[in-house]
Length: 121
Image (cartoon, rainbow, N blue to C red; front, side):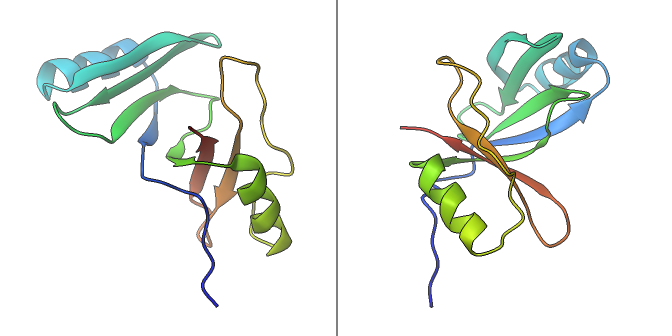
């Protein structure tokens, strides 16, 4: 039986960095990546960079924030419920951090790699 989710693409690969400014200088300065997003996030910033023209970004994630691959989905609630019903290793609850942040939840693959499904329209 074919099982599907409402995932639409690979949007962002989040990597932990110890110094966001140094990481930004490397990716933007040395590799020539564009800065796609740089906004306040917790005690640090949420920074996404990408090669010019690329659709997938790299998030320079501060320690303590979830790193992993961010996968947009059209319906986080339905995907969460269906994956839980199939005993997939997902977060117990969907993260809802207010109107400015879309609903999201974590999923772990069999090797423990973190995937974050984030609702997008």
